[in-house]
Image (cartoon, rainbow, N blue to C red; front, side):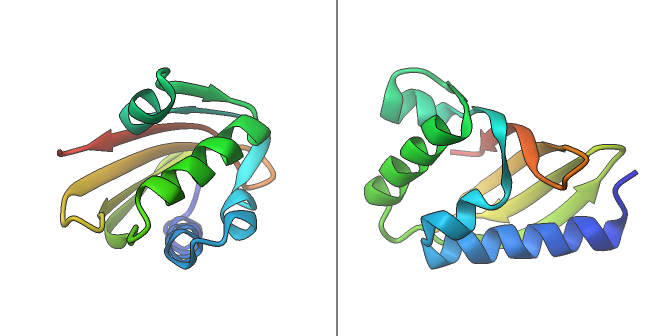
Length: 117
């Protein structure tokens, strides 16, 4: 079980890295074999599923370029056996949620993004 404290710490670090737009700091949260599924990836890449850390990094770089004012504000953090969910507002004030499965090294290896808009 991922404790509440670990989940909150991870979420805060994750949001801080995204808000800094520092791609190397962002990527510290992801495993080499990460798989990401996101409607935004579908929009930017033509495929909602992105596999592997290098491909995810390339997608994130495109995302940061497409959304230069990107900023997240945490609404809530949920924790489970080997996963967390981060609910947040994005730069447009829309709600979003990221379901993240965490490996034994504390890295995201599977992530599903959800958006209210």
